[in-house]
Each structure stands twice: as structure tokens, then as C-alpha cells.
Image 1: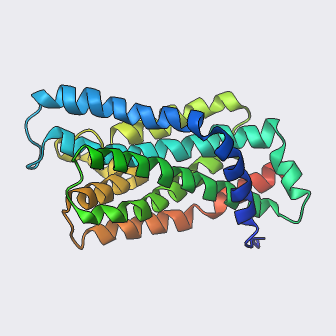
Image 2: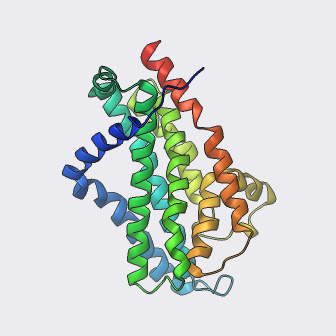
Length: 255
């Protein structure tokens, strides 16, 4: 099936961005404060009792992981609950497709805005831990491009779910069964080396694991050619999952 895409997808992005400019303070508060609470409670609190991990303190280990997880949560929320509200209750999609903008461009525009939220929220956390003296490497300047990959991967997963769920309450399955396990078993809070082999292999399949494996070395200056393997995996993941949300939203809105 042929895709109907053009630059007009950015107009959908811009529409969401204009709305966000009016509500950014309340929107950013939850995603901004929660990682800081984790950093304070687990990094400064519990980390005091945890021995060094691979030569770094627990706080140094945890902080880069929170950049990745914050970016994931921001995009996942945007492309599920917020997108569903625009589609189902506000009828924003219906209004937009009454203009020359196509439904495919609406879906891609939603994913672009979800990616923007990933970069924004992840970069804010990066700046905070920079101020705390936890970013020793200038290679951290490459973290925002990694967050673009993070945003697009989770925007696709979120929009797939938005194309499937019968009602807004059903998103709880997505967050409980998919997002929360990723959050806990992607190497954000502890190395996966000590976990059973099956857990390590399953973790390798999920995008957040590769985001964490990219962000942490960039923040700490532990660069290697192996990082390109994580980039390649994410690019392939994004390419594979680009079409399903468009198909599902087409089927849902046009029958």
C-alpha cells in the first residue's frame, strides 16, 4: 500500500508544538521531577550502600540511564494517551484530514512530535546531571541525536497501540506489560550481567536497552566501535515499525 507523505507532516508537528507552548510547564513537570526523585532517592540515598559498578559510583551509573528512561516515558505517554485524546475525544485527526493534510501525514506528524518530547525531556535531564558534575565527557553532546532514535522507536510503539486499543483505559496494558518491564530490565538501574541468560537475551531485543547502552558511554566518555552496533539495531527497528502504525490508524479511521 502506497504512503501519502510530504512535508505537511511537519504542519501536524507544528500544530502540536503550538499547543504545547501553552501547557509546557504543567506537561514537563511530571516527566522532569520523577527522574530527579529517582536520582535523589536511589543515586544519593541507596547508592551510598552500593559498591562501585565497573569502576563508577552507583550515582554515575544511574544518572545516564535516567536520561534514556525519561525520554522513553515522555514519548510513550505522548503517543498513547495524548494521541488517543486528540483522535478519539477532540476529533483533531478528523479536523486535520479535512484539509490537504493526509492521514498518513497526521500519524507521522504525531510520531515527530513524540520524538521531540523524547529529545526535550532527555536533554533536560542531561543538563541537570551536567550541573551535578556527572557528565565528564564532551561526547555527551551526541546524546540528543541518540534521543531522536529513542523517540522515534517509542513513538512507533505508542502509535501502534493507539491504533489498536478500544478505549483509553486499555493503555494500562501497554504500560504495565511493555513499558514498565523495559524500564526495569534494560540496564537503567543495574547491570544485566548477573541476571539469568534468558533475561539478558530478552533485554537485547528491547529498544531501551540499546538506548541505555549508547547514552551511558557517551556521558561517561567510554567510546568504542561497538556503539555503532546499537545504532544499527535501532535504525533497523525504526524501519521495521514505521509502517504498522500508519496501517493501523488508516484501518481504524477509514474502515
